[in-house]
Amino acid sequence: MNMDFYRDALDHRNLSEELHRTPWWDSLMHNDRFKNALERNYHARLQLGETSYLKKLLRSESERQSFIEQVYHPSPDQLATPDED
Image (cartoon, rainbow, N blue to C red; front, side, top):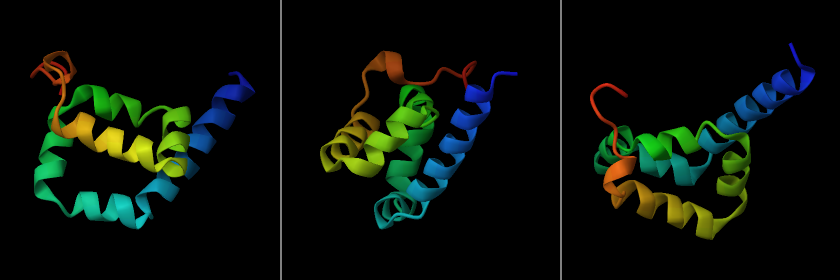
């Protein structure tokens, strides 16, 4: 396999762990309304799988606010269908 794949996977894991340790993420995960909205929002969950997007969330307050808005107010095509869950 390509070494870039492994490097990206490791970077993603490290960034994901860093995000999950932030007070911002912790407060969101204690909000049942947000967790339910995130579970239904397929597009937002896909974005969290991208290393570059995690970097943006960790570095930018405006990106975090945009993410929250996107989770709470998704367009209909961003919502998961039963087959996608």
